[in-house]
Image (cartoon, rainbow, N blue to C red; front, top):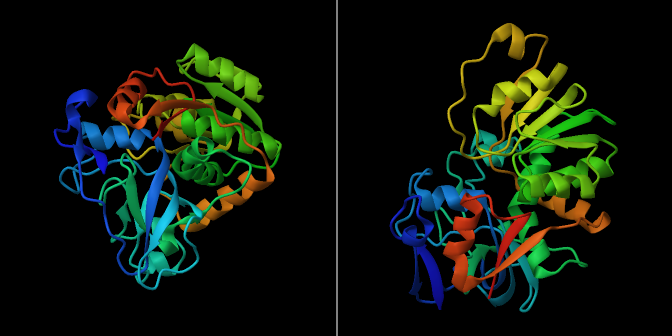
Length: 332
């Protein structure tokens, strides 16, 4: 098989990644061997390839928004049959025994491992996954449409819940890429008013087409105070901007795994009146199941920019340069 490996981490994606011939992986006990039919290109892949996230596995194959079909079941693997369509996401495994796992916060497990960072991911022809961490996928979506749901959708769903947006509330979304355009639709379906703040004119147009009440530039002030906000872009200097847009008691959820430095905050202007800023760390499997259940009941519009698998480095370079509208997806 062929796969893209991060051989020289750096900001030039065409140098950081190399497409190489690799041995087809074998499924271990409890695992599935999956033929990759689509793999989303996530900003986390960009952080892995650039070295902004420290390497966990030498020459790792990135990619953790994987849609494929089951080719082989390892010993004891349950819940799937040969040929089933299956999803592989960022969270690869946890210990299941620590205090975080036992209280339902497996995303905080110190022993957690991640697809495309600790183990090879989906920028390849085949991938493996533990059956108990694989997802049953909803009908009515193409492989390319499903792929972004497996991280962009899941992390956006978790960020929305952690933002504590009240029913019928006013939500601000900063940045409007793969995750944000899905999160906005979930919030709108639940009765929220959504205001989008982003640099890209194309993204602002998409936001309005999807039903946002307004779409301004990233540093603009929304037309009304916000009950909650989510920061999707990895720009720390937007943290005080978003906090100042919150109404009293509002919460800002920072959804990225990587963020540039946050400027000094002014307590009275940025945090007083019980405003809250909180991070969002990975996801639980329950988040994934809840998001996919929502997607089965509410048809989401997934904006996809397809790339052939042979152009994975180009897709990451385009993502880094903000040339992707919606979600980039690699297809065999």
